[in-house]
Every structure is written in structure tokens, then in C-alpha cells.
Image (tube, rainbow, N blue to C red):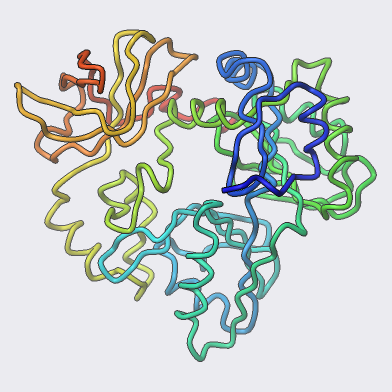
Length: 375
């Protein structure tokens, strides 16, 4: 794919010396300094991520809630305006069409935030599934700019730019508010992110993008804020065992197998994929997504590497990154349920022929209690 599109922040990235890569046709920063430095900055201070290529899909109309209750595995009915939740859209087999965030932005208006590579698939599926319901599916495209400020100092940085109350008792996790930010009116300030740290995602009209970027960087620089690329976003999510669609999630994998079965709410009534998911829930899945933690950062593990137990191959690596904050290489894989036991030792053989032992983890290697996330 030829990189022909630029985010509104592109020239700022180039001026900062970013290494650019293709991200869905956008020329996006992979790193500004090093992945490790940006990873550590986000864990210790704050990181600024350009996620402009992710776009909202709006569901609006009298039957919007009814439709989303059927389309999503989670219980959208429990959302008030100003709240969001993590959920999945599933096919009739229970396979994940996409995992995404759903925000209630108005009484009869909702925003879905699909995985960037799945926007077209999500919109196509929703358009077909909506049927005769009084609900309109709209891809809002790149008219909405989107920026993510992540890290333990993110609240201090964003609060310096707005009068909106961002205190934890006022704006909890997966909540959002609206207010003027850096003199830009009606900015949506959401306490969400993909880093596993305290963080905020900002949504505003694209024409303000450069101004907001500069304002956030100016407010954050004294507090250690650095611009970060895709490389750090990938390593941060790995430490938190956040699955990535296209690697750890596909239409042949269910939320229960992927370790996000807690999002499936059987008590709410009918929804797409319910019968298959309910059967799997009671019978138990045949496989489970686990994290493999290696002894240190030395192993050079890659997608597709063989995972063996007692000399027999039992799985393949679905994703792998360096866990810089915990000092260990990490990988994800789907192990047969009988072997998906915390503490089990497996052997991973790389394409170069080298092998290394790893320990199975069922929970996130970093902050499994989510204390930092909920600060």
C-alpha cells in the first residue's frame, strides 16, 4: 500500500525526527527516539500518541439502543450519557468481528470505536444487521481528530488545559466529559486508553488538531511528556495482556477463548452469537489465550513461532513484544485448555532454530490488579 495520507500532526512528527511507517495508508510514527524510551516514559511520566487513523462509527435513532443490545455482547443498556464500555461484535458462531469501545454520547446516539483495520468490516456488518430498525449507522471518518495522552502524569497535563473536573471521583474509568480544552470548545475528554496506565483520549474537530497537539505538548513537556509511536503502543499493550485484532483476535476466536468472556452478559437477553457463546461457556473452551513470560529480554520471539510442551507442539505464537517495564520478552498464544494453567513451563522455538523456556501467565504481567489504571 502506498502511504498517501497524513494525519493533521504529520509535520510535527517529521520535525521531531520520527521514523515513519504505513498504518492503513497513513504515514504514522513508529518511534521518535526508541521504543524502550517511549515505553518507559509512558509508564513513568506520560506519552502522547497520534491515533488519528482510528475513527468513530455513530449509531443513532429511536432504536439505537435496541440494535446495539443485539449487536454487542456487553450490556449497552447500563450506559448513561457520558459512559462507555468495552465489548465485542460477534458472528453467529460467537467469533469476534471486532472488539471495540462503545460510548453513549447522547440519549439516542452512540459511538463505536472499532479497531482501525476493521472499520469497513464493522460498518458493513452493522449496515446489514440493522434491518428495519429505526437506527442509522454512520462512519464519521477522519472529521474527528483523536489524541491519546497516557501515563501517571496525564491527568495533571490535561487538567492544566481545561476547567472540566478530571478528578478520579468525578471522572472514573470508562467515563467521559465535555468541555473547553486549550480554548477549543466542546472537546470530548475520555478516561480511556490502550496503555494500561491512567490516561485520557481527546476527541475534537480536525481543524483544531495542530493547535491541540501544540497545547498538550507545551503543558506536558515540563512533566516529562514525550511523543510516542506505534512501537511503544504495541509493547505497552502486551504487558497488560490486551489482545490485538488480526493477531490475537479473529472471526474464528470467541471472547471466552480470548480471556474477555467477562464482557459477555447472558442476562441481558438475545444478542448475536449468544447460543454459541452460551454453549461454550457451560462446556468450557477448548483453548485459552495466555501470556508467555520469558526469563529476560534476550529471546527474539516472533509471530508464528512454535510453542511446545513436553516435546510436542501445542500452539503457535500470535504476538510477541518486549516488556520493557518488567524486563522480560512476552508473547501471546492459544494453549489447549488443559495446559492453560498459570505457571506451566513451555518451550518456544524461533524461526532461527533457537529455543527458550517461558512461563504461562493467565493475568497481565504488569499491574494485574489495575491499581495504576484506576488511580
